[in-house]
Length: 414
Image (cartoon, rainbow, N blue to C red; front, side, top):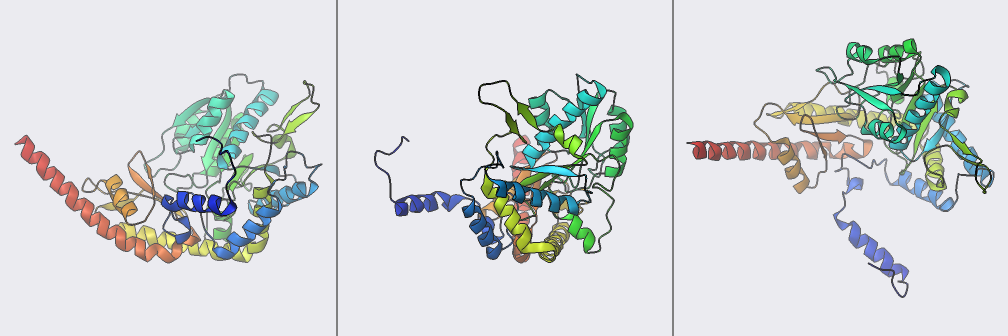
């Protein structure tokens, strides 16, 4: 495609976009368990309206756009309060969990060099930690030391302790981890980091807008946030179960001094002082404004309601999966994330995913082991019964298909 010689009309452009979207995952219907999470049309509209007010503004320079500085500060402070950050806690908004994690890796590298003189930094992380940590290690020259998880998919404290050395700049745990929704033993892992002077990051991109409200609803959880000594940073994605538009995440540090290791400043060119808080220079104002608007629109009572709906729906889904012959849920999910795997070898779980997608359901595929990944949000809650009905039907078809395939294989061998 080349640039059209003559511009198209607004109607033509919007019609073309509608046509292009026809085969995209229908996340608004509650049939998509990944990527986009819905809190309903009213929340979507307030986000749309706030975004439009800041469609072109740039938060790279908050002297030019002081309102964006205020909005970002408000969002960061609200999230810090949720994860028990005190007045010293500080952070920035980023474009998403990956950027938040990359910033943390860079900050940990800088801190290790500044405080301990480490020039060959290492990062110790469970194999369940998000792939973005490996991306950050690749970008910033940090060696990854990946440790197998326990049989229940939680981080193995003893194995990670054995991997920590004088070169360790960062230790990682998740609250919860993405693949199976399991909460890592944050207190013990943070202690490992503190003992060697390393940073410890609690990756709460998945749970940061769920676990605080789950606790307020009466669920007892092991401590995982800034209440834990040794936790130096936390990432929280707002565009997941905070129900804000993409891309909005918050990365928090226990102090401004630790946050300073994230920023980049440069004055050695002809353009004057350049400073940026994250990986990008230009920082779109629309996600910041939309996040601020949604947080204020929902408030604590709104998030308590949405969390209850999401976690109740996830529990119903998990119980339903366990009732289907040939399927199981991996580990012990703590909140709203679950991985559906085969129980034995009677079902090809990826074939099951294909069959479900044929009926309009979208779940991510992941391995090892082969499983279907479901992030359950409040928007999925009305559709859980329908999903479980189709899941049982598709599982029956998958069992029959696998049995028939094996019969054919056996006949061929004979």
